[in-house]
Amino acid sequence: MTVAVRLSNGTVVAPVRLRRDGYRGSESIVESATVHASSNYVVLDPGTSEFTIEGPPVTDKTTVLLRYERIAEVPELPEIVATDEAMAELRMQWQNVDAFYRRVEDVSASTTTPTRTITLADLRIIDVDTDQIPASAAGWTAAPDYLGLPAPLTALVPGSLGGVPELVEDRINGNGRRVKVWAARHGQEHATLVVEFQVAYADARTRMVKKDPWNSRRNAKRIPVTDTKFVELHAQVPVAITADTLDAARVEVNRIVAEIEAQLAEPVAVCATCAGAGLVLTGDVRERKL
Image 1 (tube, rainbow, N blue to C red):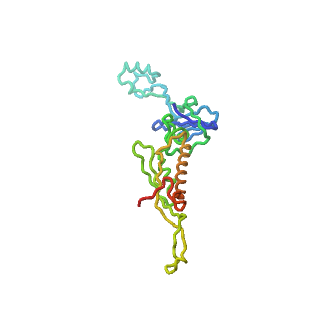
Image 2 (image 1 turned 45 degrees about the vertical axis):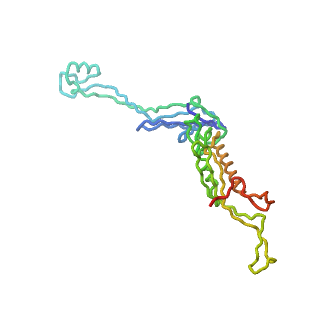
Image 3 (image 1 turned 90 degrees about the horizontal axis):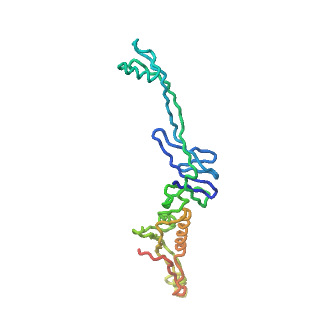
């Protein structure tokens, strides 16, 4: 059974597979004030219970025999034969009698347009909590129960979002960072996202520096200890996210990105073991081996 969705405002969006009849053309949806056609689905305004699909016009020809007229000078044969039955009797009496007659017909043509009507009772309708048809469903695969529902309508039903590590990579990359993805091994559900960046900081420690080589220690001053570390963050990112809708999956992607951004924003912390005199790397941030 075809799966359709009913938006929160009562609008029904149903997929439509139009048939094509060779050279004659393909079917089309009959639009009205309450029925609106799209590329592969139809939108029914609230309260509309059916829609009509019409095929290409079909032309039928009707032929009616008027008479047989004699076209040869054969006095033994009648000039006019009125019916097929009379002509059949002549054929039994004469050989090649058709060569002496011309069939006169009246040919008329009539054109009809075949239609078929789809009602809501013919559809399996899924209620969704939105009143908007999504623009796209890129990366989203509907669950098996909803197969046959075309994009972008699949974004409104349960399914899974693939390529999550690459989506996170695109969001994190830049700003002096280099991001790469270590693909998940066979059977694993998570890939490793590696973010390489630099951390420049000055901690609470200081060191004595003379103003110039000839000055004595009395003229020296203390300056903060600065350092630049080449570090990397390793984060586990799911290969795919299963959710009730594509929007819900995107919310989870945003949460993953926010967690990683939070670690990148605070890569160092005050060292507790050295009474706050130094700084250490935090979370999953580690020094990069050059």
